[in-house]
Image 1 (cartoon, rainbow, N blue to C red):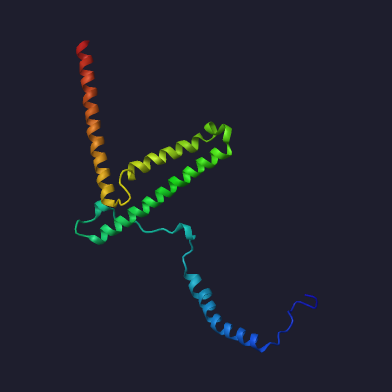
Image 2: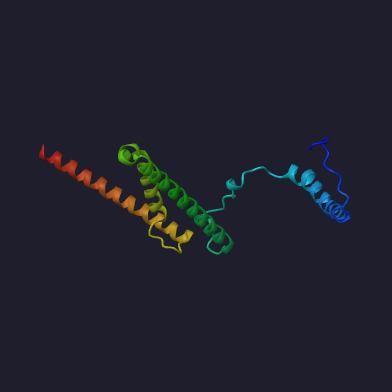
Length: 171
């Protein structure tokens, strides 16, 4: 601006009317947002929205469809989050592999191990459930796994006891 800080005066009546109309509509809305909404708004980044944890499927009564629905929704949300974490770990490993091309076997090994551990944990929790899995199927899978681990542990303890008894008999 050549002659001071003020813009040149606009003598157009239509623009003045449009500006007055805009200010009449916009001013109360802007005031309400700045003075009422924003001071009372909870500050959190959009990507860190936190949902309250709901009861899991084992805590629901058998005749409570609302609790069942909430548990299934929580399960699907958890599955999506875990799948995304696994995807991010895979991308980190692939990026490291591309960047450190000749020496990627040694440099990217921590990324590979972390990815493999996460993949194993994901498969233990969600593997073999299918695309239409729900919380009840996952809970049954967990129950069957715990029963299998208990049975296997008992079998291994009995086998170790037999081996120990057999060695004691030889001596």
